[in-house]
Length: 74
Length: 241
Image (cartoon, rainbow over all chains, first blue to last red; front, side, top):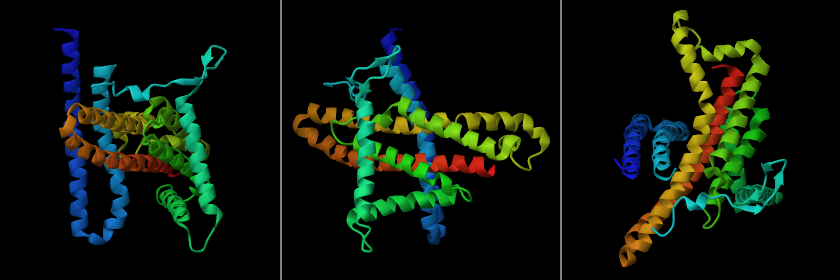
């Protein structure tokens, strides 16, 4: 296999890691909406913390993306 | 595509300087860090100067930032967190203004460099560890073993906790670096579509406007998350779980 083709395939494979992060971020927001639907009064309190959960989960997608970019441009 | 989307992250020396074999040139990264410090300091100084009972628009923004960080420190660090407020506030303002100034077309985003973010994360990590050891001495080691867990689980738990503790500076720095880098790359790539599609470029252009707004949101959120995670790490060191 040519090195270039292998590099592109590798970048594509690295991006698979984002599946998990996609599920995770979906879970974060689903639970957020469920929580405020059950207890609207807690919106302010949860609202600030949801971003931590979102950022921590989203970071996993970015780790995968960084590996993909490294394979492409590195 | 006309130009490589990674070109915007190239570090260019403005004033080449070399001392004892180390390259300490004044680069565009350093220039934008200086601009960030000057802009954020001037913004806070000038907007607070009037000290009006009825605040001006600038004073409200400055007070809002101060309140956000003050609440963050109070809620997340808990008792004994007040001495660290100036540090967290400086960190927050530096990262926030760095991210936002990086969105100015033609500017340089220094937070999109792992060297910069890892330096900040490493300082936080070392400071937090030193504070924890200075405050608790050898009891600091209990941070790696959850209170009340059965003793035999130590074999599994201590390595896990140790790895999770040591990976903190890595995840803290990679998170902000990756978010900013990827955001700017996406902007460039979609801008390439706009040019390539000619008249139909209006469609990616509309998307580009939305993504630019999203990137501003990311810039603020990442600064907030960076500061709040520093607070949480500080809490762990001060109160040991």
